[in-house]
Length: 217
Picture 1 (cartoon, one colour):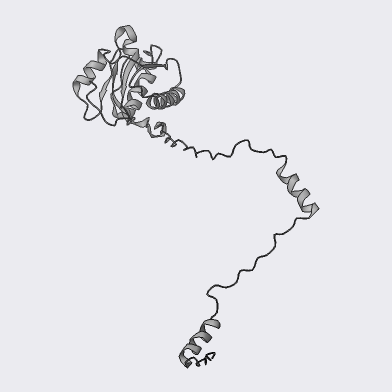
Picture 2 (tube, rainbow, N blue to C red):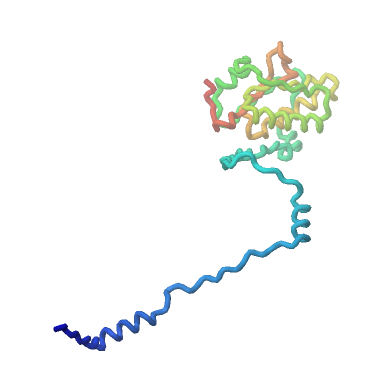
């Protein structure tokens, strides 16, 4: 005799759960895809005329980005800071007078070595026969170039000024004033007789790459 089965009705709790699951809304909004725009023949022609001829790239590697060098700060010439009126505050130098100067903090042995030619001139500038304005401009540019190249000892020829009025050489006295006002000049003095004597000077510059240095070993 075959058995008969009777389905029992589900409790109301389970029916409520099933209904809620079936009616649950999706958590994400549906994404609507829009077809890509199609360029007309006229737009395509204008695009190709704008970008010009193109050629395929023979490789697909990405080149590393090159680092640009850091720009160097431009050095001031200090020419505009050189006062010519201060000549009245210094004793005038005659043709045969010697020059000497030391910036604050420089030891006397440095000046003695400079006077003896112990540093060795690395660059030379001849200002002999120039006007005051032209000599000032050339000296300012010369000092900028020497500082940029790291040159320390310079040889400046200003002449003895035999044709100057009153036996007071104009250019020599201006050189004596200008070099004192330049912040990178550590010392200067009259050159040895074989290298110009009272018509030339040795100039010692600060090593701007290392900062202040008064030892010069």
